[in-house]
Length: 297
Image (cartoon, rainbow, N blue to C red; front, side, top):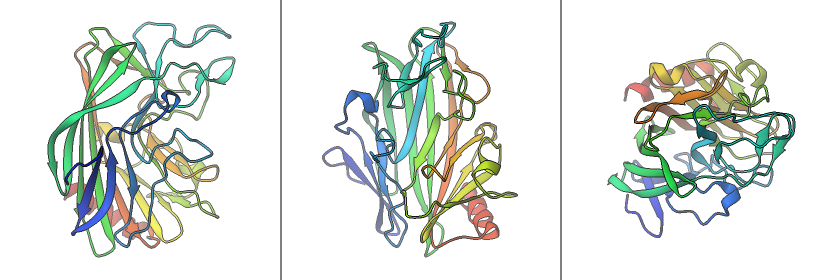
């Protein structure tokens, strides 16, 4: 992997399988941040989407959080008040009593540099900044592992540390009053096709069955591709999955599902998600076998 022009290329079995955009030229309302796009199968089929018309703040695969606030602040307030948190997700913010409102309180994930950069992976340092200061430091580790002639795994770990000098908390639209919208953390936007992808997991099928579920893995299968997402640590597996298929195709984690997640000054959190990227449509048993192999590789 040799970074050039703000883009680093990730390779597996000698093939380019992902591009990591370190310094995208984005408007502030997109909450500028590094992201992976396009990510492709080994046969070259693109399985991410960036800046789609339906949600122009969706940026391929990466890490995004819609609400980071000073701990103890009235982040939702009374009806009509603005939240005090900063949006590292992009787009409008959900305000209790008002719905989604464009508040202009967007933070920025700044790529500070690579600590390690090899053809099959990298370790990057990022600063999450808002109000002119650094709120969070992130170390992001991404690696590609070949699993077969038709499948590979993207292993993404992010470690966030509160360097603001104050207690912080992480929220979501769900904790701010919108049930079922607990997105925040790892997020993968898949391409929208003529038909919605099939969502399935170890013991269920369909968006309604999987959304908000704590499961070892969940999968999306589209036209000629399958993505299988696995929480690779015990702490990651405690986060419920955010799953969309009908409105748009995406899978993410929920750092703040039932309540805001406190992050004390100097403390942090670590999450690891491994994604199997496969050509063709996998069955449940095949998906489970590849996930087990990918997580332990």
